[in-house]
Structures are given as C-alpha cells and as structure tokens.
Length: 260
Image 1 (tube, rainbow, N blue to C red):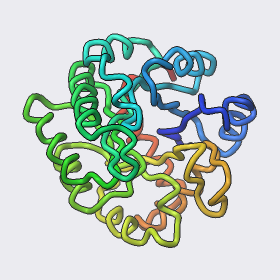
Image 2: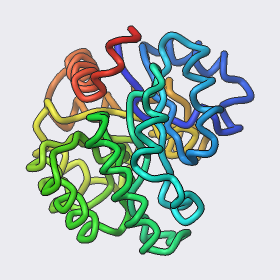
Image 3: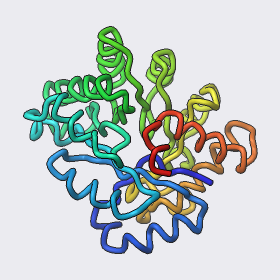
Image 4: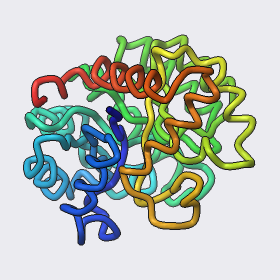
C-alpha cells in the first residue's frame, strides 16, 4: 500500500468528483491521503473532507503565496486549530521566490510562525521551498536553535545543499511527479543519496502529474507512478518502496496512527 502524503482535495479540479477520486486511489493501492491546507481561513473546508473519509487526514497552514494575507494567525492560533483529531501536520508553509506572489518578508514571517507551531505541537511542518534554498536553510536552522521540530521538504525540486542540510536536521524529503520527468536527472541523483528511511511520496494533486500523465490533471492514484521511479532510483522493488515510504509516513505523521 502507498500513502499520498500531499494532495489538495479541496481544489475544484478534485472536489467536484471527490468520491470517484478517492475510489480510484484505493483501487491503485493508495491506502491514505493527506489533503494539505493553503489558507488557514479555509480550514473548515479542509477538515470537513478529512472528517468525511476514514483514510484522509489534513493539515493546517498558509501557503507562501498567501502569506501576506494571513499574518494575523500566530503560532498559538495554528497550534490550536491543529488539535483537530484528523489534522496531522502544519503547513504547507515556506518560501517561493520563483513566483514571489507575497513579499519575501511576509513569507519569512509566516514560515517562522509555522515552525513555532510545529515545535509546539510536534506535528511535522510541510515545507514549500522554491528558488529559496539559502534563505530556507537559514530559517530552518534558526528554528532548530530554538528547539527541535519535525518537518519534510514537500515536492522536492531544490538543490543538494538544502536536501542534505534538512537531513542533518532530522527532516524528511517527499517526492512528487517531478521525479519522473526526463529533465529531472539532477533530482534523481540527489535522491539516490537520501537514506531510504527519510523518503516519502506524494502527488501535489491536482498539479504535477507524473509520467505518463504529465500535463493532465493529477490525482492521488497516480502516486504509484512516482513510487515506481523512486524504486528504480533506489534499486529496490516497487513493493519495497511502497512499504518503506508508508512506514516513513506513519513515523513522521505519527498522529495519523490514531485514525487508522
């Protein structure tokens, strides 16, 4: 069985046929999914999806694109919302210097609040990082100096330095359909050096569909294609990578065990 550790089931591309999306995922061997928050103010919608299915969990947080719109939510506020029994993670939060949809100062402020919430709750922080490796390393290290917190680099497409620094801090790395793209050899080379016990798989659905569905709408069932390529990169069987990444998920997202 596989776990899609990061998808957006509240987005209209998926929410309009959610029952069918979930059914196809289960048929593809995806036992659990985490629908990830991008707006704290929409947490009611996120948690309602998780409440409606035994095998779906959720997170609470603000995507860096929306950081300047939700700076009024402090770490205590995020931690309080995360008490919901189906909420197993903080985020996604981080830095996105590719689009720069929010001021970088606001992104950094929001990220720090989410790090504090992850430390308070000991729920994993789901990190979004794009074209911001040096600043991300600096803020993550700064956060660790104030006390340890669990985290993973979601949809990893960054450089080797960020990956290795995150691993040194005890964090995890999650791979999306990007891993399957022809142009992603550098990412595959980095992943080859990531320990098996730190790897997860995800879709980031409805975005980033893996080969052979690239360019189409993504959905949790397709995580199997990313897992297949990850197995090739790591030199293990598909069955072994499914077992390993699922074990890693439940180790990192430890609150999820309460709802199995």
